[in-house]
Length: 154
Image 1: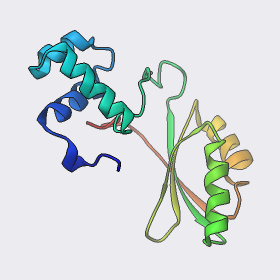
Image 2: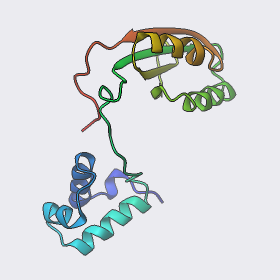
Image 3: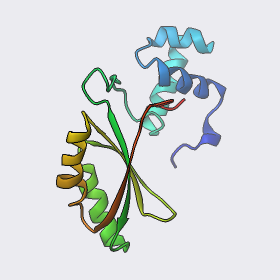
Image 4: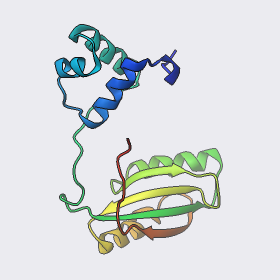
């Protein structure tokens, strides 16, 4: 049975909190920060990884420094919301690299996308050639972000 929030104790929570901002911290330093020795800290890390609580480690980049300063949020309404149509849309969205996030929404539209591109010209191309051609798309509305106040969680 997979782990749930109820299965996490204060040491697990501390490990997750620290790793969310310091993913390259050594196990020895992590152990010192949470108040355990290295061996039990390693065992906890392995358990968290094996149970899918920690799903991976990656480098985060500054999108502006890599030329991806333009952020748009796109409301998408579909022509069909039966399971087969939703599955086709979901699979197609995963293949568009500019779509950073995709959430199914309960409300006046079906999906909310976060799209990151270099500029408005790039965004217009992605909208016309990728987003508008996704399966079952009936209508889109775009909202351009002027400033990111908070990103990345925690």
